[in-house]
Length: 292
Image (cartoon, rainbow, N blue to C red; front, side, top):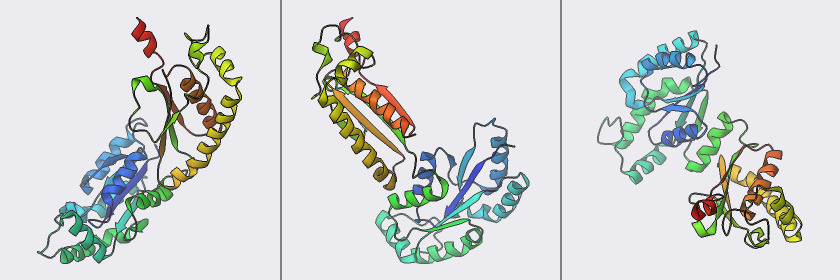
């Protein structure tokens, strides 16, 4: 039988469930918000028959489905009969913190048992007490920022978070504009330009002749060494801040020689460190298209 990673996310309104479900989505879980408990066994059965397509699943079950909550215990028993043992993540916070959060967002409490938000919060605690008692993980978010909650969740559910992160590398040409939505942009236009060397201008940074040309210069060797050392130094701090991916763009004039070369070199270096790396040479063929 397929091994499902199954998580039920619950907790008090305003305690951070919306942040939590985004974290699970980033960890490649299939997520459903406000899932009626009686549908959980049926959906789980479909997942078991999905031929390995769905193996990581997270549902949010909370007070919004109050009329269905009594059926959750039965649904959990049905999952157990299917050899599925979900982990229950319960998020909570102190009353005064929840009051402050509702005041900041001016949201209406979903239970709304009276005109008093505090009474609604206290009533919600009572209704979710049974579910909380079954939780495998309880996180008090009273003193946590969204970023800190992200880290706390990953500590429990992404065991390799301190060792791995996905890294995206992009080469580009400044003449075609800066890439958007990247974490770092590095300019390597200080390196000798193969474009002005006979026999190299029509080649790219993927070609051995261009690589050999660039590697012969001390500035290439020394800057590459220092650049890679800085990246190695920074990655653990990005991970500590809760990032699960890092995007690095490296640019030269046309995005054909120097940037392509250095992205390829960095790709090899990071793979030796066992990071999952994805690379794209954005502008490597732009010159060819324009000349046609």
